[in-house]
Length: 378
Image (cartoon, rainbow, N blue to C red; front, top):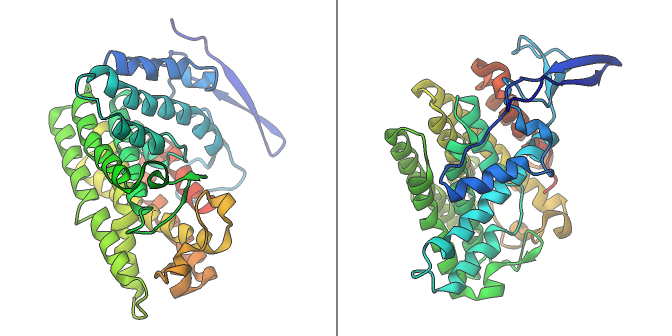
C-alpha cells in the first residue's frame, strides 16, 4: 500500500526548507526466496529510518547548502551519517544471512564447522562496510536496485575480509588485533585462518553467480570476470606482492608506491563501484567514469590509512597502530610528509567527484562517501 506524501522541514541558514518525498512505497522484494526475506525484513526494521520505505528520486538526506558548488546546478549537502544509518543495517542483515545459508542449504556438505566459524568470525566482526555501501550506491545511481546489487555488494566484503585475515597472518603483517578483536589466526590457528580466508574468497564468486536475480546474464558474467581480476595477480595479490618486496628498501619511489596501492587497495574499491554500476546498467562511458572515480578514492583511502597509522592510537584504529613504521614500509607520509599526504588525498577526492558530474543529484551518496574517506578517524 503506497505511503502518503510526507514533508520534512530542515533548517538551512535559519530558513525552513521543505523536502518533498515521493508518494510511492519503497519495496524490496526477495532476491532469492529465503535470502531475500532477510533484506526485506531489514528494510522494515525500526533500526532503520522509516524513510527507507519510500522510493524517491533523491535521497531524503539531501538539503540545500548555503555555499554554491560550481559543478552543480543546485548546491546540496548530503547527510552521510543518515545514509549509513539506512544502508548499514540492511548490509549487516544480508551478510549474516549469507553465513546462515551455508549450513542450512548445504547441510550434508557443511560438516567442516571450524571453517564456517572462521569465516563468520571475521566477516561479522563489524567494520564500516564501505565497499558494499559503495556498490549499492553506484547501482542505484545507474538505475539498479539494492535487491539486484546486494550479492555483488556482499562479495566485496567477503573478499575484503579474506584479505584482512591473510594480511594478519604471521607470515604477512603478523598482527594480533583487527577491528578491536583478536585476529582470526589468534582464535582459530594459522591453518584455519588460511582456509577460512580461502573459503570466503571462493564463496564470493559463488554468491554473485547464484544469488544475483533480475540482471541480464552478460552483466553478471562481466561482474564475475572483473571480480576475479581485482583480487588476482593484476589486482590485490599483485599489490601485496610488491608491498612485501618493498619493505625495508630505501629506493622505493612514489610511482612504485602508487602502483602498490592502485592494486592492493584501489582495485577492490574499483570493483565495488564499477560492479555496482554494471549491475545497474552503466554504459561503457559511465563505467570509465566510475573506474576513475573509484581508483582515485582508493588511493585517497590508502593515503588516509597511512596517515592514521602514524597519528592515531590502536584503540581508535581497532588494529595495531605504528606497524608500518616497525616493518619499515613505504608509505605516503614517509615519502611525502604528513601535510603533503593530506593535500594529495584531498586532490584525489576532488578529482574523483568531478567524474560524477553527469549524474547530478543522483551521485550525492557517492560524492558524500568520497568525502567520508578523507574525514574518517579509523
